[in-house]
Amino acid sequence: MQCFPGLSGGEPNRHAAGLTGNTVVHLHGGLTPASYDGWAENLFAPGQPAAFHYPMDQRAALLWYHDHVMGVTKFDVYAGLAGLWIVRDERERKLGLPEGPPFEVPLLLQDRNFDLDEEGGLTGRLVHKTDPDVMEAFAPFTVVNGKVWPLLEVEPRTYRFRVINGSNARTYRLVLFGDEAPQLERISQIGTDHGLLRAPTALPPDGLLLASAERADLLVDFSGLAPGTELTLLNTASAPFDGAPFPAEDAENAADTDGLLPYPQVMRFRVEAGPPSSWSVPAELASDYEPPSDDALASAPRRAIALVERELEDGPNMLTMRELATAEDDAGGALVTINDGESSTRHRVAAAHFEDATTFFPMLGQYEVWQLINLTDDTHPIHLHLDPFQVLARHPISHEIPEGGVEDRALTATITLERDPSDALSHAIDDNERGLKDTVRVNPKEIVEIAVRFTTYSGRYMYHCHILEHEDRDMMRPFVTMPAELMPFMG
Image 1 (cartoon, rainbow, N blue to C red):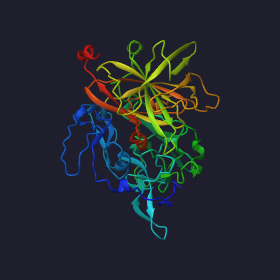
Image 2: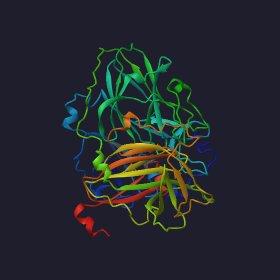
Image 3: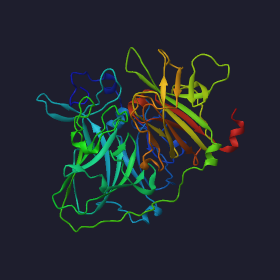
Image 4: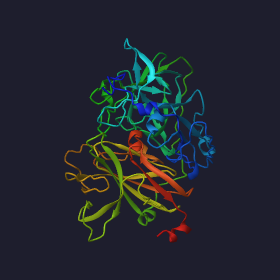
């Protein structure tokens, strides 16, 4: 019943009703000093003043700010404590891209549910509803900039859309549809989470994938369309999302209540009469970053994080991130073995919960390679605070976890870098993922490798799954960035 309006017979949570409005702001994607980053436990009570300083010494990009209070981020963001934050710079401005209204349009996508009155009509009262045995909320209606299924009238020319998935948990796979066929060829993607790509790229053939917190900077060409032409933006991603493909040609038939997607509709565009105008996309957009060199990666520290799900008898399952450390040769007990061809490495769990001791101390200015190992059945969008990263690889894996292998603080698993026979995913890096990112989708049966280099501030930050119900339920860990001169003293 989760993806239908109303309470569906459920009882309101008395603890949620008793919340008084504690909050702490996180500027997502911001290069922000640690004291202003929105640490989840640095909450402010109602009426308590706070002044945060955001230097904005970073490249142009669409960021967003939202609440980050420990345990109730899912409620606070869902209730409206989130907004968009666009950073400009002269490098981007020289390209002559549409800037500001009416031809640059931010699109904040969220899913929302509403209560019903006695006659079954929508009241507009927000409902955050989950099934008793799961923690995620997948609401039935898509709202864009706060409005359910809006209509945007456009001229026959090129528009710039700054798109962000601000939903708690829902992944969107967006398909522009008109004249009974996909219209993806009208779209060029020019930017991602942290701004412009090096060159424009076409969208993946199935549509634009955006998990929670991911952003896309798009140019959409409406030129050549007759007045009155309507195009519909549709979502084809079922929930919980597991990376499964869906053909763009069938987007109008994506409705699937079993997949918690009763309404694929996102919004409509209607072409109005006006002077036609097309805009040629520059072949080069940005040259201020490049992939890390082989030499930089050869000496980079490696970190491994396993995403696991532990079954509980008295509530929804617990999802956590297990930081792994190399096990000693004579180590026994619960171990994680990773097989890669002829070589094998063994690991033990070094940390399992948010409050466990910090084990990650990246050194400023040095590349690191993080391996995100998904041992669950769902796709998880993993977000790192502070500096952006680049996606290096997606490796298919098979894995075995024995009965009882996922314990509160221990993990027993065998992971092999090979495709599982039941795995139908491509595990390819999409071209629009090759920019600077701060959130990456990690699909089931997959290891995602990212290269990150923290360059700006030292201090205590976080990384976590950006499914808000997951981060609130302990799928979050701290890290501390350190200046090089302090590293000799870190035993």
